[in-house]
Image 1 (spheres, rainbow, N blue to C red):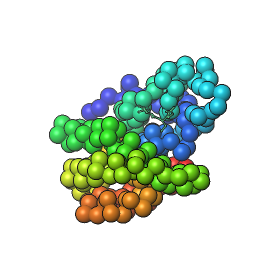
Image 2: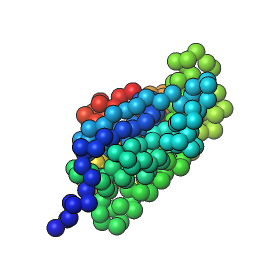
Image 3: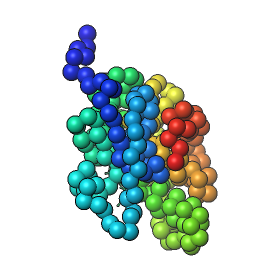
Image 4: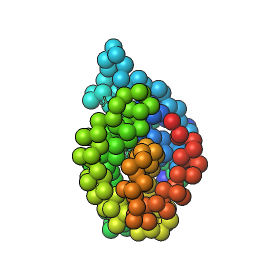
Length: 220
Ligand SMILES: N[C@@H](CCC(=O)N[C@@H](CS)C(=O)NCC(=O)O)C(=O)O
């Protein structure tokens, strides 16, 4: 039987520092929502013209978001935050215990973090959707250069998914939490239509995951 005596409880204050629009902040929020943990989001202006305030650099010396606080415990880097949330709080388990399944989840997280985020969010979504919204011309070269990498990311995610309701396995995992905020941006770009063609597992996964309560509760 699992010994819960080392478990921190939700009676300590949980705070997430970040901005609601941020993909990485949303990943951490999804973990908190899926585990049904009460928390407050402390808004941080990451692109403030006055630069990164000293007090924020204390929480995150690299000036990024999110940063996380649980009582007197502080941690930054989304990977560390979501794994802490999963390990420290009761509720559904976001990391499978079977070594092979866990490796698959971590592989997908690695792909999303290292390759898909930059390509799908910055090179395609920000260039196509955000630039139009802000009245800027899209950088067509950036978008065109990103398409082959985007296709590779999507075909790999599609291939790796075992299609049992979630990206991996029959329950929500870190793989879904990393993928969903990236997809929420990327799927708004017209380029997404042809890029996801043939990625049936991903398409059905997104249709199901996009309507989860955690997704509506964290909508920017
Ligand atoms: N490796 C960091 C990446 C976090 C990150 O890039 N956050 C973006 C927002 S989505 C940010 O802080 N951008 C501000 C900047 O680049 O100055 C993590 O996993 O937490």
